[in-house]
Length: 174
Image 1 (cartoon, one colour):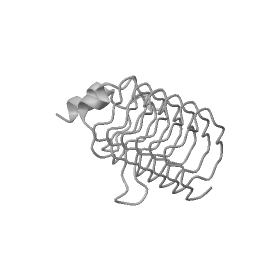
Image 2 (image 1 turned 45 degrees about the vertical axis):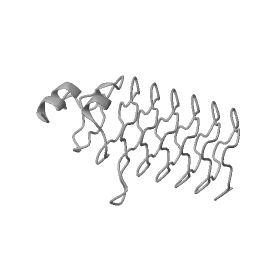
Image 3 (image 1 turned 180 degrees about the vertical axis):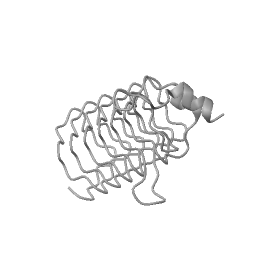
Image 4 (image 1 turned 90 degrees about the horizontal axis):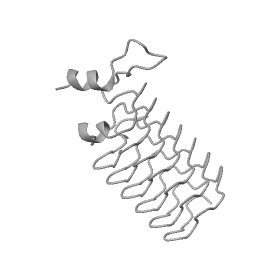
């Protein structure tokens, strides 16, 4: 399905596990509750797509356009979001633990401008070199335990007991 045009399609509840949807146009679609585990969504256009409660764990969304997408409550564990555009995306309550939000080759950086991170699980997430983030956004996350921060510093966790807490990291960057 590489490069497929599904703009505005209703794929809610669909089983799209391991699907090759790279460079697909899913703009404005309804993908609520769908399973996209392990899907290949590199450079896909998901602008304005409704992905509420979707299971997108271990998927490759590198370079994808997720601007204005609704990812509220989505399961994005270990997803690769490097270089993804998350401008104005709603990530409230999403599970981003272990997700990659960094770049692989410059200048591909995840853009978090105006993204809603309220109650998002960012434990272990790689935010190194993420752009467009604000202190207020990160403060709204449910947890950042073990996250790699935009400056590359890893926060305190069981695996990294000597790292700073998020609050300590903030104080260092005032």
